[in-house]
Length: 514
Ligand code: KIV
Ligand code: ZN
Image 1 (cartoon, rainbow, N blue to C red):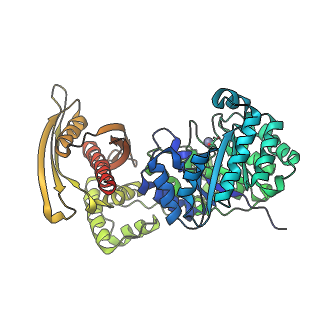
Image 2 (cartoon, rainbow, N blue to C red):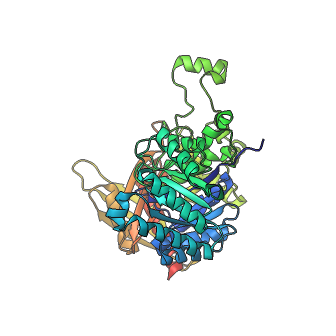
């Protein structure tokens, strides 16, 4: 018998991007969208077009460039919003307009200051208008988890009659429990006469840590679209985590008996990419993609796994794309071993990039005994786009200590045109509250761009006392946020590199948009 398909609707670029501090620039969003396509998601919610010009542009570019999945944009139940959404998604091979409107009495009375009748009318009109523009319409009954079930069924019936192809039942505030939420889905299925004309979708938030459990309970009760995000990022405590839902459906295939198109071997890469670009680290013991998800510490467990893996492991790390061979490289590793590792990590480099990277690897291996995957990824990340930089850090010296005023001197190479032949070197020194602050002040004096540091974090990217420090930061420039990342065995240097990367992004974005 043919099994039902569960549609994976990924909202990393919309709800995920609403997590505090998770904003990405256009290029980063495009990278994520392409990786989501490689992962096999069916629908990418690329943004909320009317919310900002940057969101509009990102949805438009993703619609133009990312081919296989449907591309959805979010909008409120208002003509202006719906029109803007259509203008952004219309270029996609499979565009989708996603309209939302709250249906709980609390939201209707307090937030919208309307009546149920007005909300029903608005929902139907919005879907009709959306349908006049786009074949594929999704309607979300915001706060459906706390909505009166009779009214919710009425809205669902009305929007399906008006042309909605998918009806989404969000647990907007993460309030529901699995049995209760499953019953709600079953109830909607039973009571809505035209329900077979649409796909039931769910969108669960994780405020009580139940987003994945609630999504799975909804599948058991007839939902066939799951809205989720990579690493579970999203508003507040986040959304249902895509990798967890996908792996439950895979590992417990005979229990759920549904099919889906997620290529689970792409999960690890996707998780890494999203965490790297948003700066939101994955909790160490997170299911599926956490650093400890496959680590066995106790002797009894290790002994069991060595005798028969299945004793304590229900998922093979290779099923989620964790490289089997966690070979550690070092200063005696040759080109062959190094480039094999680079290839296994999924990078394709040209000859020039390979040569440059190998030189950087050798320099790092002189400073650091063991080179881990994270170190290699950091080297590659840092190298990419460096030839397009307007400002290149050329020299850095910083001093600090007890009873010393932290002081820094920097030299920056400024490419006046985009040709490296026409570059100038500038030099500045500054004092600060610490060595990093002093470096940033010296850099600010040279670049003269009125930049505000919005976020700064530092962590070790691999293990060992000689681990490289990785700095992730965000800067604000002309109302926009730009992120930067830098890695080095010297944390002041890592901080400077991250700052320079963010500045170069800001510079190239403003150049492109002026
Ligand atoms: O949580 C929510 O209700 C949403 C809707 C806009 C789908 O994000
Ligand atoms: Zn949400």
